[in-house]
Structures are given as C-alpha cells and as structure tokens.
Image (cartoon, rainbow, N blue to C red; front, side, top):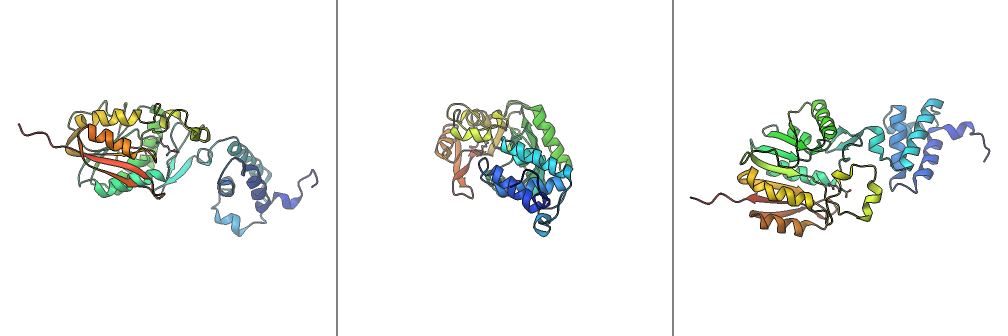
Length: 287
Ligand code: GLN
C-alpha cells in the first residue's frame, strides 16, 4: 500500500472497510457501528451506503467520520456520538449523563403495558433518559405518568424526550420513592442500577454513568431500597415491577416476599433470562 490514500480508498466502501478493521478489536458490532457512524456523518440513511458504495465523501465528512471512529475505538458508545438511541420503535436523545436504553428494558415496558390497570397513577423510578416513562405515556395515554431521577442532567434529557414525542409526564428530582406520598401510586416500576461492584462486565460500560449501573456489592442495593419503601407509597393492590440482572430473579422475589408482596412473578427477556420481577401489594388488613 502506498502512503497516499488513492481515490478508491476514499469511497464509502473503502472507508467502511478501514473502520471495520479498526473497530473489530473494540466492538462486537464493528460493521454496524461503522455504518451507523458513516450514515450519520453523511446525513443519509444507512441504505445509502449500500446503494452508493463508490461515492467519495468530501474531505470534511471523511475527517468527521474518522474522528467518530476514533472515539468509538477508544470506548465511546455509538449512541453517545450520534446523540440518539432507538428504543421500542422510537428515537430517544441520549448523552453521557444517562444510561443508553437497552433492548432488555423493552421486557419491562411490555410487562407494564400489558398489566397496568386502566387509568392508573404510574411512577417510573430512576428514569434516566426517560425511555420507560416516554414509551408508557405514548402507549398508555389513559394513565398518569410521573418519573423521578436524582440526577438533574438526566431529567433534562428525559424532559426533552417527552417534549419531542409530545407526551405528558410529570417529573420529580428525588431518590427512588423518597418524595412520594403514602398510598399515592397504583404502579411503581424501575430499571434501577443492578450490576455488582467489581463485575468484570463493567469495563465495557465505562462511558456510561456509574450511578445508573452499579449498586453495591451484590448489585441489589437500589432494589432493596425501592422494595423497602414501596409498600408505603403503593395503594392496596398496587404493583411493583423491577428490571434486574439475569441471575437476580430469585433474590428479587425473596425481597418482594419479605416485604409482603403477593402474586410474585418473573418474566423472561428475549434471551430467555428472567429479567423482570413483579408483585402486588397486599390489601390492608380489615380493622
Ligand atoms: N442491563 C445493563 C447491562 O448490564 C445494566 C442496566 C442496569 O444496571 N440497569 O448492560
């Protein structure tokens, strides 16, 4: 190979080939990452890359694409570079102050859409990008949605997403259930942090907010805090739905059981892992 890039090294096909090779070590989805970054830099849909493999982007597009590939190769997720991530069929704005929505969380959303009774007061705890709250508000306009997060920068992202998708969500900057009134909620749901400190999996997630991922030695601190206070804020018969790690379902059901929840259930994600556990708050004893 010569030192000077020849004309055909600057085509769409050649740029993608070079980026794939560079990203292969860092990313399991090197080809997809390269295509998403190049399409976004060109301001075209991904199909453009297949239709026009011989197109030669301008030097400025090339430079911006190469910077985006360099960022990816040093660990920046594609979603942060693009500023957007698709979740449940809609585009959500994201930045490094929020966790990037995962397909796993679609299981939580599906469970909620199916199970929430008509007209419920629903609270999404630790909303982050607002993914769960925004999708629920769209899919279940009969419900009243409130979303909390203790991070103000995260709430700003979530509010922007709600505005963009034209849905009504009320917001509260607070830790978990701490600011909620007693007996005020029909359904509580959350995708809290649940990764254990020191989990080797965290190395690959270093660009994302650690507070949205890690929760104590066994990963269950946030879930313990939510389960402990949920009986206070839920109405009798109200439901709590929690996303958790692939190996945490039994532990989460045990916590729900200890806190007096009934009708416990765990629901599997698309990979077959129990990913969401839920229970119903017992009715108050008749006095
Ligand atoms: N499912 C995420 C992951 O392991 C973790 C999300 C979370 O802690 N809520 O990548």
